[in-house]
Image 1 (cartoon, helix red, strand yellow):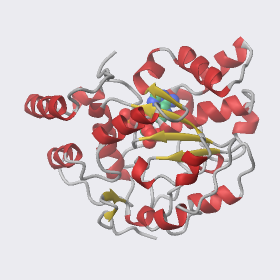
Image 2 (tube, helix red, strand yellow):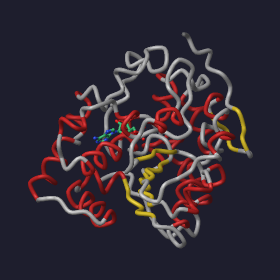
Image 3 (spheres, helix red, strand yellow):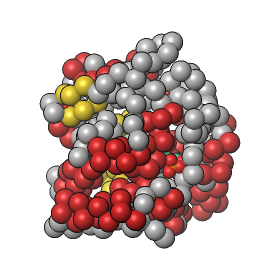
Length: 291
Ligand code: A3P
């Protein structure tokens, strides 16, 4: 099936991929279980990376167990829906406890049960400049999105929150705020890139789990960009080509910090920085755009 790049559909003011918008109603009936773990991110912030890390932790570092299925079956993507592919809710029905769940939803669309059950959340945030470059390439290769247009117009749309899932700025701030009332481990892509072992230890502590040192080292090794890029269970090469066309841009594209420098012109960077300073004014946490 060819996707016609349908326009985004607004749900409670949030622009979403048309098919995903259709799941938001049914998703509100989700019954969360107290031992669920939710991996939440704005798109292109390292969701797949975190999903593989946490599944490896849950499987005690056993590679063969993590190879049981592609990542989107091991970590159901709650609002996912796409013709011809099992939806997130359908995948969830087949998933035994303890479940790992993935979402990109802003809090206004999150099923209430996840909050009521105090489900633990690992949130991973990535600097906006690398996110928007990654997102532009992803829009191009994943044809459930509308046509991204030129890079310049996509950048404008991103700044205005007119891309799928809406405003990055609001997303990173509201999930940060959630920490005040909910068990959220808030991590940064750049920190994970800088020192994955340190960050994996934070995750273990948050989950109340422990693993031998050599298992942690093995997880670091197996979840490196290089390893995940060549692993069919994490690189999405088994997704239908009509849905993701890796010949346009591979899902596992670069996996670096600072790739934005190859895309932003000097003028775009100045405009982005000025808008960023205004929009993120007073924000108590900082992003690193280079290491
Ligand atoms: P790039 O497009 O900048 O390469 P998500 O999983 O949230 O969609 O995020 C995808 C981004 O994370 C892509 O960024 C992808 O390459 C990067 N990524 C995936 N696995 C990674 C890993 N093991 N290490 C570093 N980056 C990774």
